[in-house]
Image 1: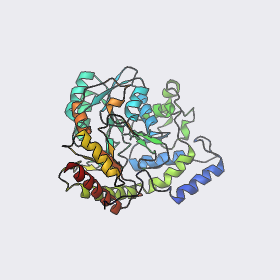
Image 2: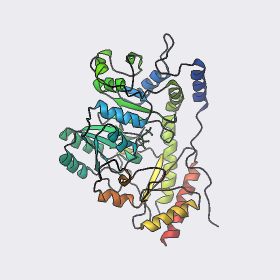
Image 3: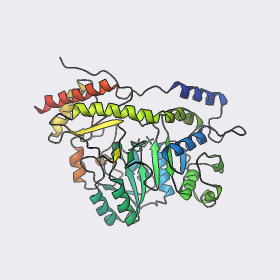
Image 4: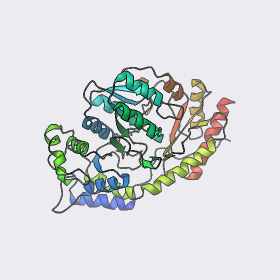
Length: 397
Ligand SMILES: *Cc1c(COP(=O)(O)O)cnc(C)c1O
């Protein structure tokens, strides 16, 4: 009899009791808008901004409605103009090229390598070919490229780096937190990321002018002095008249449920990594499965896991999905010709000019992915890894 896994891959842990209490208090107050404050009150959003700034180790933090809005605001605050080229990863999720498109700019896609990191040789080529001044670097699925080399390439070429840290909240490279390398970083607190407020996001930076522009862009009217981790008043002198209001403020309810979660984020990162290592240990010995190498410089946050089946055909990959599904394991496959449930293939971003990316296409053709929610135990993750191994053996024998 085949063994089966019976739990849901999309079930997160419940919101902690102290976060629920904080949410109820906000609801009872009726003051849900971030600027609707009683006399002397700091407010949940400003408090969260200060706490996230301190946790991240940045100078400034702005709380927003989503990670995708943080990306758009970061691009606008960096002065990206319509028609301009913006470099980004060929393998990422749709909100990334979507943000570039939303500001009227053109995505220039950069190849990835077999460990899902940006190919820095292709980056150098594309910088020269495109003349781009901005890169939206997506740390897709938590895999950081050699950040020192990347920054040296971009600094030398005068390319500003915006980090998309939707999958690397809490990760680091050589002891430096992901998000603290580039000019500005964007985070998501959407349900499937490392903090859960349904929707939400952060923008962090050390640049006071950029922080002021982003704050005005977020729709702060003239109330920016009520922020918890914003720059000094003088920084707003120019931006307050120049930046359009894009209405992307976070509200007090979301901030209230995020603050208690931030307090347990470090502990949760350890819990994710235990689950990741359990799944990886089960997958690694299989001779048809290639797991993704994590460099010694990287502190990874294993909230999802990827692997490749390098010598499998598309037909075999489809059969693996079915064989895994028959065992209760929901796998995502990046080689499908039609996007199902997510869009990570550049072929399905038809708003982006089509580009030749043979390496990325080759790698994605046999690439699989699954989330590891904290609602799974380590034993669950071991079992999932073993069941995938069985499914692969059944198809590939
Ligand atoms: C989720 C995600 C985003 C955007 O986050 P939202 O809060 O959903 O808008 C950006 N980049 C990547 C890689 C993501 O997975």
